Amino acid sequence: MLGMDQQEVGPAFRTWRAHRPFVGGLLLTLGGVEILVTMKVSLKIVVHLGMQGLAGFMLPALMVVCGLLILFNPAQRLFYSIVGIMLTLGTWVTSNLGGFFVGLALGAVGSCMAFGWLPDQEPRVSRSQRREDKRKGKAAMVAPESTEATTADDGQEGSEGSLRGSMRSSTAASPSHLTM
Image (cartoon, rainbow, N blue to C red; front, side, top):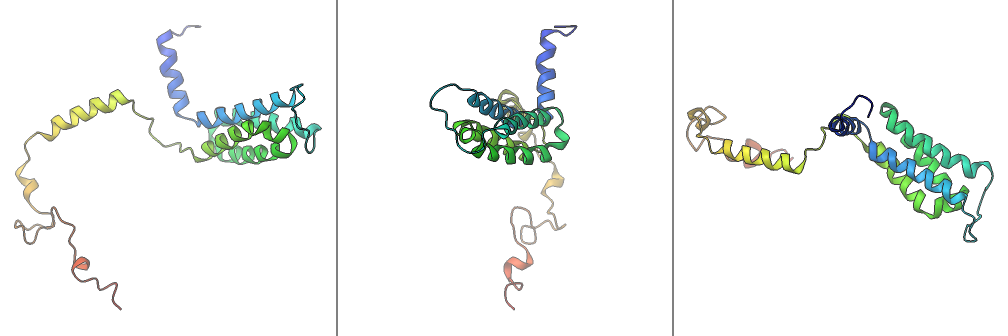
């Protein structure tokens, strides 16, 4: 690779992918490509239903564009995903029942995933990292407790007035907010 080591490419792509709705954009793009491919099929099983002219090629091509825009401009993912789902549903009529339902399903799922993606979400931690953190967490739990931890949250040290370990409150004993 041009100036980049093989080991640097994997983590760079992983961080790029983590900051955008990658799977949603990819599925929307693949759905549009699949519908375009089924429009060019020269088999006799091709269903010619609805408007076949320019709209039959334009809607899947715009699906591909929306999928790529979701990948490369994730700040506008909500707009692109809404346009993508409308284009996907439009291919039902214009493009061989949405690419024999495969492209329709890929486009719909991809648009929904892109719409639901949250940008402030932490990247997923690998399974081995979670196991390692769990082992370290158990070791930290074995440490002795401090004497301040035995003092109750309300400042009283007895078990009678203490709120520690129970969910008691003044409304639990007499639910006055329910009786009117």
